[in-house]
Image (cartoon, rainbow, N blue to C red):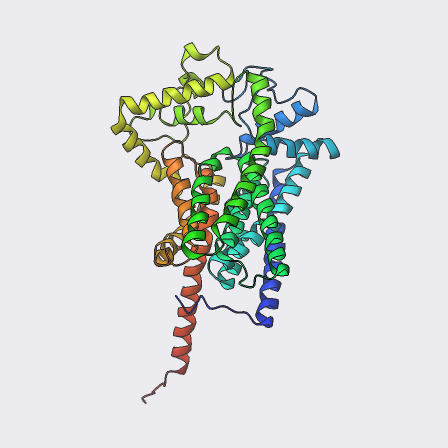
Length: 461
């Protein structure tokens, strides 16, 4: 594979890659805008997009001066007119801004999101692929992301997926720069001033990227200590950047992240008279994901005709507000594990099939099956093979952080609750791995074709 990962630094290659990246981004925008028009100027419960209903309702409540409260009895178990912290505040505010400025037009919110994700996601995956592999991998990765059916579909759904994955790519791109680019050896005053300026830019950039990612999905908080540990290890082991400046950058980024969370923590305390760091959903997820109703085989979506998720909630907890209920359910979920740890292990392993499902299912509609087959269904062999083949580079390059993210994120969902769309951030990070295999296969096909063309032919009459 080494022949594929050659650096092409000539001007012609740079112009060519920039040209092709521009075409890829235009294609990505075109496809995503098309889906936005398909979903239209209304909010419907399309496959895999039920959260749209909640974000739309919340944004209208905020615009009406009702704050972050629900209009009627609402998912997961919040009473009418009661406060909620279950949903991303940042994404709700995005809809508030769009509806507030332009009127109630979900289509416009879809179009803005589709255009932004159509530009940023291919561009960031290009940077990510180029940084952790090489430019050709970056370019192929951008093309794969532009055409990946799941990313196209969710770019127009009024949910956190598109912005969250984009912010995640930004975090990993900046982290790659921190783990890769060392300080200048010259210690002149001018050079030191430039280094300080660069460190300040990286601090603000990383802090903003972390804040956006966490405010869209608080789950990412779990990965931040691993990310920071890797950056400090790179700094100490490979001298990519002195440990002291690295610590300063990370502390500055944490400060920005904390300042972005504190207002919502204060809001939650005012609303619930209880400390809630950001969102009230971990307890619900952990309780439902490990409930004895699953037995030893996880059910990703409870079937119709059986008990609903609300019916699984303990009746004695019904009087609790959303925050108290979330924490009580987290304790009940942990009690399930203590009562039968063996079942928890087997149940967690059973979630693998739901997390990595790539085959059509009778339980899914036509749209869901088409999305699955035309994205993960096509690429997963290349993703898996690339993930395995590139293991040899883990300790010699900064690629380790990509492995740490994929493994950490996967384990979190296998231990709690799994849906296919929860895997999409992992899909994005696995795309460059797939690109390495596709480029290798292409190179070998070209070599075989060239050898066939130049091979002497002997004709016998």
